[in-house]
Length: 487
Image (cartoon, rainbow, N blue to C red):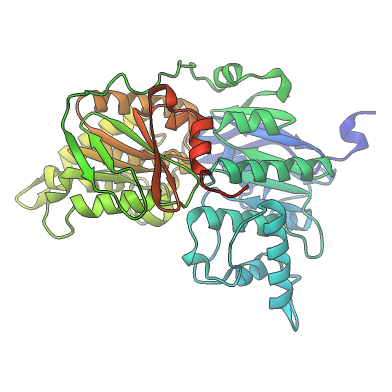
């Protein structure tokens, strides 16, 4: 008897095809997920991962093929059917209502919370689940979602998804669930995922952080160009073989520090603030990393630097500095605009003649950066929301790099970007820095921090350590992050 016959699949997709015009998003995908499985789903942006997720969770009906739940083949699709069969999803683009409280958002996702006293029950439920998944969090569950940081919003949505009112979830789809979480919070989540799977639940994990995929998955499915190109036990993969299966060449990581011009003048110098004993400064041509636990002042520093160097009223005066937002939905994209307009808006003063935008120059700029960033779209005139999350992030990168800004600020910008594109972006950053551009980069990924020339570690809104060269290691960043804590 086969394993699937003994334990019916939580979900089974057979021969799934989905087309958007001339684009074949899925081209005959087969995917079954059994109870007690943690499936790692990987592939470059545009490989079809989000599309198969939308088919599984009922948000998208396939043009060909069948979808079944609980061993029932061809049961049909639809959100109600998927949810009735225990399918839950945490989206890369978070879906909480920002004008409602955490308790009210919990009620929206769990219809079983009804009747007299539902608020109290919802508060107890979400508080307990947050404490279970993220021990030691200090989130006020009566607060409005719009007042939370992006990391806190991600934590809340994860907790709501794993919570059970009437029935426990059978399959939880996690689409880049750690993209806004620091290393400590990410490990708490992955530990909970392992417990959930060990108890018989199923998880479909999408992440561009391959170490998370390898350490958490029991099986890894690789997609490319709308097809499944590999499906094997996680133990049969290494980072190198996984990247190669995705269709990329593994490039050796080089430590920062080789570009830095030691005698170059400082382009930014900030005095000591508060209790900090270390001031912030950056030379032309340096890549400066901001590290430490999430929410300890790194983004505030970037915003202060941007306000100091930019102008909201003098056209063209903002050439001194550019900003790449990590929360693209809130601070990055203009959702009603085309891809091209989202890309070119930072360069409009240099694309204009007699106060009118030169369409030819704008299109040439877009075509150049589409190729350089490998933005997957047949037409830059398409809406920005037609792109996958990772491709939207590429547009934001292209917007900043296409300007003449001497300083580029980056607020954890690699969220949802595949490893192949990351490597290309790293190469672009290195070459731009070598030409004299300064990058100030907050990242929650240690691999990216290690690419920097110098790193400032933040704790409680202050700089507590400055690391250079071989000092830039995870153990040193963590030691500085927790310095001063009582044991």
